[in-house]
Structures are given as structure tokens and as C-alpha cells.
Length: 403
Image 1 (cartoon, rainbow, N blue to C red):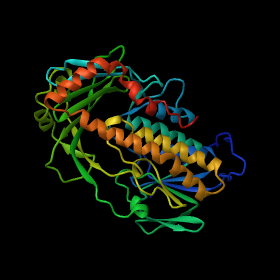
Image 2: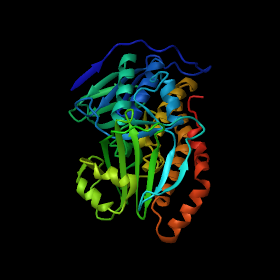
Image 3: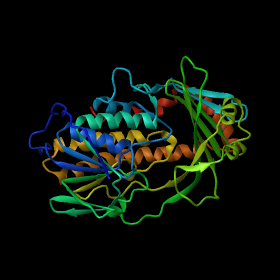
Image 4: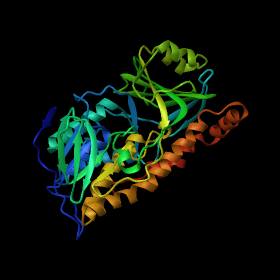
């Protein structure tokens, strides 16, 4: 097991409400070193907590792919002091182009949200920003720590690792993803439902730069492809979604065959056809659906991010919801008199919004894959309202959890 610890200063004290507990010195164990887990560890540490991140991976490496951080997520990154005046590693978005699949004909253009800019990040770059900030703040990261279970005691939580080691803390946060091994502790066993959709993920080098880079959403019957630039337009991120029934395995890093990808999207022309022709390595991600958790916490253990509310990727809000969770969770410890009430407040604050965003993503999954007359009718509507479509989702982007 590897321990990474860099002693660092704690950020200035945050406003604490009268009658609220003193978080200073409370011991937190955060299970999972992804975006939500690292953001939560940093937010708690900045308020004075002692935080250890338990990451099952043996090394701090992340291949990943691209993700989108809209204004609601960027607000948290700014509040955590992770970003400078110019977001490091982020690619500013200038909106989204909607295309038809056959020849790449432009259907409409969606302007960037009025709430604030969206940035495209390579997942590895955003994780690196959060890791560096967490270590500098004094968070301890324990690698190779595979958690088997979390036990609740009256005044603490006990974490049992696969190697038999036992750790005690005041609070445990399970940020171990959509396939969380901790979630059943609070909700019992659950059988995920296959959505009959598969995501192909890839990145390819870019040789040409655009003055105002945009995302592109190319829609066809039963399939769609999303592309957007990363790393100052050095890379293009590719996510190709298709409806399939011949699938059994759940996972997001399964090796795929680029030729199979091209064969399945052979009738996609225009710019996206050229992009797919350049893919040399791809991975498959089978989209399984789990509901928003019925129970998020038990007074000593709380779920965060995909462990609490796994979402389909069709609103690009998975990472943003995890960032929101992280900030709100830390904030409740400044507002509530004890751990139990802080966790209860966190669940009450987060559940309604998470349920609404997850439901919205589910609706988009159907809209992107329309067939026949319904597809043509939808295109006519998009031609008329596309430029104003971002206003429909302003309730998502304009939400500021740090306000």
C-alpha cells in the first residue's frame, strides 16, 4: 500500500453558522480518488478536516477521455481555488453544432449557455489539478486501498480493507462510482438494467485549429456521435453511441475494434465520417442504468457522485453533479450542529436536483436516436429553436452551489 501525503496549509476559515459544529480536526475517509472524491476531500480539508482518500488503484494514473464542465461545475472548481484566471487545461466551448448523420448537414447551432462558459477537459488533466490541490492542502492519499465494507458505530465509522486492515474515522464518504461496492450497504443489492446502448470512446490527434471551437452532435437512427476538442485543440474527443441488444458485460474500459466502430457507423458522413476514419484505438462502455439511491447516508456514511446518482451521459452532467455534491456536503458541516444532521441535510439538499438532472439525461437519450418521420419532424423543430435551446437547460447550468 502506498501513502502520499504532502503537508500543506489549510485555507482561511469559512463562515460558520451559529450553533454549527466545529469541523476542524474531524477525521474523514473518502473512498475513491475520482473527480467527486478528490473535490470532496479538498473542500473538507479547506475547512479544517483531516482527510484521507482511499484509492484502490496502485498508482495515480488516469487514461480516461474527455468530459464537459459547465458553469455549475466550474463554480465549484473556482471556489476550491483549483483554477487560475484562465482555467488550466480546459478548452473553452463556443456552443454545439447539430448535424444530420448522412452527409454531416448542419441542422442547427446551440449557443453557449448564458449562465457561463463551458470547458472541455481531458479527464486525466482535471484529476491532476484536483490531486495536486488536495495534496498541497494536506490531504492524504492512500493507494492500493481496496475497501471491502464500511461499518457504522454510534460515534464513528469503521472501514475494512480487503487485506484486513481496519480504519476508524468520524465520517466516511463513498465516492466509488456507479458500480459502487459501498452503495449496497445503504440500499441493499440492486440489479442494474442494461439500456441497450453502447458508447465507443476514443481520442485522435488534431492538426487544424478553429478560432471558435464547438462541440458537434451528429444524430442518426438509433445512433449519435459527439465530438469536441481537448488540450488546446491538440486532441479530438469522440463518443459514439449505438443501440444494441447483444451485450452482457458491464464496464467502461473494454477494448474495442476501430474497424468494428467504423462498420457500425459506416453511413455517417461529413466531418464525423472523417473523424471516425482516424480512430486507431477505442474502448467500449456499456450503459447500464441504476436509479438514484433511495438512501444516501446513515449518519456516519454518505454516498457522493455516481455512487448516489449514476446518470446517462446525455446531459454531460456526471462530473458536474459530483462537484456540486462535494461542495454542498462540505457546506452542511458549517451549518449543522452534528455529523448526523449534516449528512441528513446533504441528502435533502441534493436528492431533488440529482433526480431531475438524471431524468433529463434519460429523455435526451431517446431524442438523439429518433427514426423515420419523427426524426425529420424533430429536425424541423431544431432548425427553428436550436439557437435558443440552451435556455431550456438554464436551470442546470445557472445553479451555483457555492452561492
